[in-house]
Amino acid sequence: MKRTFRSLAGWLTVSLMALLLWTNASYRVSAQSGEFKPNVNQEVSSTYTIAQMNEEATVLYRRVLENNMEEVRASVTRIGNSLAHVSFEGQTSVEGIHALSETVVEVKEATAKFKGDRHLLQQASAKLRLATDSLANPAKPLWLQYYKIVKNDLDALSLAVNQNNSAAILTNRFSVLEEHYETIRPAAIIRLEPYQIAQMDAWLSHLKGLTHAKQSDRSQLRSMTEHGEELVNQLFGREKDESAFMPYVQGPDRRAAGLIISSVIVATLSYAGYRKYRAEQQDIFTYRR
Image (cartoon, rainbow, N blue to C red; front, side):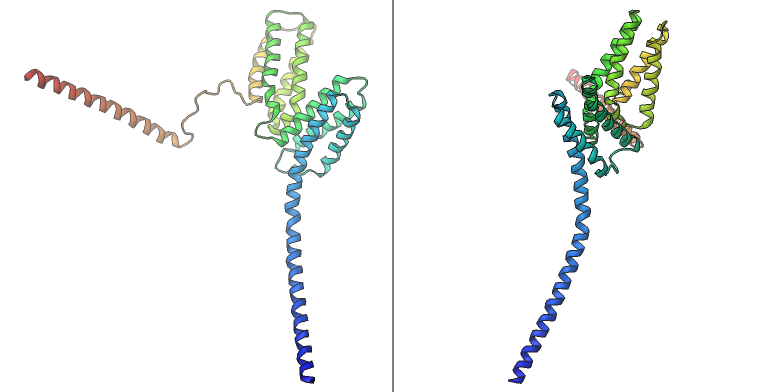
């Protein structure tokens, strides 16, 4: 009886120790998994936050057009609060983050002044919409669709200069161009190099001085508008002198491509020469017969 009790107690002790060891091991595995999962969740959260911010900016723009100011204020607050929780690492530059933050502040200020200037709020919300989209969709951002709009603005200004229109018309044409550029500027900063934006800003500033002058220099205006066409094409990635036919290969492989093309030409000419030779031989043979 005592032996049986001791055996049972020993078995229970061993079973309890095994259970404790298994529980401890499971806890360690769970703890390690818990340490790994937050990183994954954090990455998903960051990606979702950018997408969510873009969706919120889209809703904000629609609410502005609908004059639903209660929802506009709520959206602005949510977007402003989300900025502190978004990881922009690898998404844009410091200048891009600064441009986005400035745009959010601009929307807040325009919301506060909504009764005084409704157009200002629409423009600010459009800027924010394009800026968040530039973050969420780097491959095909919406702001690139403004190419035709900006190009038409520049063409209208250039036409006014060539037709020697009044200073008031020149000022009006420039104002339209400037407004459209300012609308896409934050979105462009998020994706482009700082020097590209600096070139556009400097050109636009100089052009503004020329169009707003009491006695504008028409020859200099023509020169500036022509230079502006090149800058606008570069801004939207549409260089004027870019060849419509891209090279078959680039870099060191061009020599190989040249050899291949040359070989094909030589082979074609050789074959044509051979066919001509055979034809001549057949004609001579037939004549001899």
